[in-house]
Image (tube, helix red, strand yellow):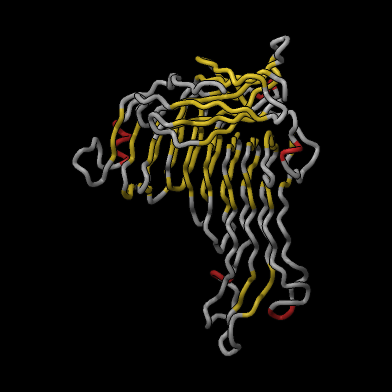
Length: 404
C-alpha cells in the first residue's frame, strides 16, 4: 500500500477578510463591504448569519461557514481571462455572467422558486459537489440554465422542481393567477452551451394538474394535465463517467383523455426524457444505462472533509494494467481539442497510483497540509499511461479541493 501524500502546494491566495454581522472580531460586517475591500486573490470568510445579496466582479475566493446564508442572489460577472472566482459552502441563488476566466464552486447548495443558477457567456464553470434544488413552483422551476456557456458537473445533483397545482380565487370563473400551474422544471437547460457531466445526476421535475375553483360547484376539480421536465436539455453533452442513473425525466400528470373540468383534456401530461436535443460524445446511446457505457474514460473522485490535517482519499478508475498518476497543479484549462475534458495548466507535483488492477479502481490518500488556511485551493487530476512506452492514454476530470 502506498504511503499517504503528506505535501502538496496550494494555489497561492491573498489575505483573509472575515465577514461577521455580529462579532466584534471581524474585518467587515457585510459581504458587500468585504468585496469592495478585497484585492485580487483575497479570501472572504463568511461567518454564520444572514448576509445580503452581492455583486462580485473581481477574482476572489468566498468560503461560507455552516449557518451562513445569503438572503438573495450572488452575482459574479466580468471575470477576465486567466482570472478565477472560487466559492465553497455557499447557500444562495447564483448568477454568472461574462466569465472569461473560470468559476469553481464546491460543496454548495443553491435553491430558488424558479431558477437556482443562471449562467450566461461563461467559458468555464465547474460545479463540484453542488446541489441545485429549486422548490416546487407554479412556474417551471429549473435547476441550472446556461446560455453560451460551458458547464462541468462533478458529483453534483441538479433536480428540476415539481409543478404545483394551481387554483383561482373562489369567486373567479377565469383561469388566471395561480391557476396557470406549469410544467415540471428541467435539471439542466442549455442553449448554445456544452455540458460535461462526471458522476452527477440531472433530473426533471414532475408535472401538475391545472385546477379551477368555481363558487357553488364544490371543491376544486382537475382542469387539464401538464408535462414533466427533462433531465438535460442541451446542445452538446459530454458524459465522461456516469453513475447508474445520470439523467432522468420527470413524470407527467395522468388525468387521461376526456378527463378534467369540462372533459377537455386530450391526453395525459407528457413525461420528461432523460436527455433531449443534445449531441452526446463518447457514447452511441441517449438513455445511457450506466457506467458500462464508458469503458475507456477514466475518472477521479474523492472522499473526506478538507480541513487542515484531514485525510482525503482519491479513487481513480482507469484502464487495467495502465500506469496511473495523481497530478496536482494550477486550475485546469479547457482543452477540448484533445477530446478530453481539461488539462492542468501547470503540473507542479505528481504522485504515483501505481498499476491499475483488474478491478479498474485504484486509491491514494492525501493529507491536507496542517498549515493550510481556509480558502486554500488544491486542484488534482488523474492520468493514465502505457507502462511500456509511457504514452498518455487519457486524463480524468479535475477535482478541486477548497480548505474549510
